[in-house]
Amino acid sequence: MSARYLRLTGLIRKEFLQIRRDPSSLAIAFVMPVFLLLLFGYGVSLDARNVPIGLVVEKISPATRSFTSGFEASDYFNATYFADIKQARLALQTRKINAIIRIRPDFDRQLHGRRAPASIQLILDGVDANTARLVSGYVQGVWNNWLTQYAEQHGQQASLPVWVEQRIWYNSALRSRSFLVPGLIAVIMTLIGALLTALVVAREWERGTMEALIATPASVREVLLGKLIPYYILGMGGMLLSIAMAVWLFRVPLQGSLWVLLLTGTLFLLVALGMGLVISITAKNQFVAGQVAIIVTFLPAFILSGFIFDISSMPAPIQAFTYLVAARYFVAILQTVFLAGNVWSIILPNALALLLMAMIFFALALSRAPRRLE
Image (cartoon, rainbow, N blue to C red; front, side):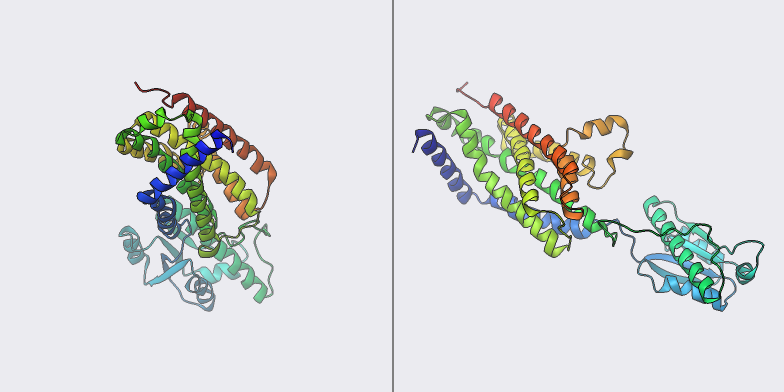
């Protein structure tokens, strides 16, 4: 065995002993991803379910009963009937309902007349623009389906000028959780990877043991590797746990290869660990290093990675800034591998970007690592 190998294994063993004495690193690696995945996985949803709506039927008939029954049976709506439009408007103003569907007395005459197509009135609460858009789309879908079924039942030709025969690829059930949970893994692992290493060098400075490390025959590269490898193993353990929760707890289909996911996950984790090392070397204080790691990793990853907000709809300067956020590349890889499979035209460019970022951060860590006592 070479002396370099013995020095490196000694440093790794020392770090594992340090982790055993101070189990906070184990909590960061394994407890935090479970807690955050449960919190955000169940708490964040872009689906509209049980949206309260008001139905105002000004003249009841078999046709209006048939139409409104579609809302009563839907999981998307929680329908309430109102006697007149004034009561419904009051409920909308007081935020008790999100929308009003009004069917006027001449609905039957319009339905069987030939001069003008039948119509309904939809009034939406635009304060929550996202829910308003979703409700508008759902109501339009219920209306189109009902018109088609009604025309077939009465031997008529559907009055819709164009019939869209849609097929949704990759996430046919349109579950927002299937889209959000893979992105959430990237956001969580950014924070955990950076936090794991953000404290290690700062801890040595605070405890006064950095002088002993510098005085050893180990080179700066061996010291950094000795600190990096144990936390890489912990980080990959946390990532495997997150992937297992996504597949078995949140029922997100894994269409691509697990090995591709782990390989690209390795690149991403190296970026996060390298970022944490740079922060730790620069800060020299555990509290400051922890705060900086949270601010520069979690917030940009949450907002600018495409995890929730569409990057293409952001202003051009913000879009340019997102190229500096490593989570952007891993979110694209995770969502592709989980939902679409091994699409190499997406995986390879993003993996190369992560490799480049990992090299930059380790070069920075090497250049800023202390070589002598000041």
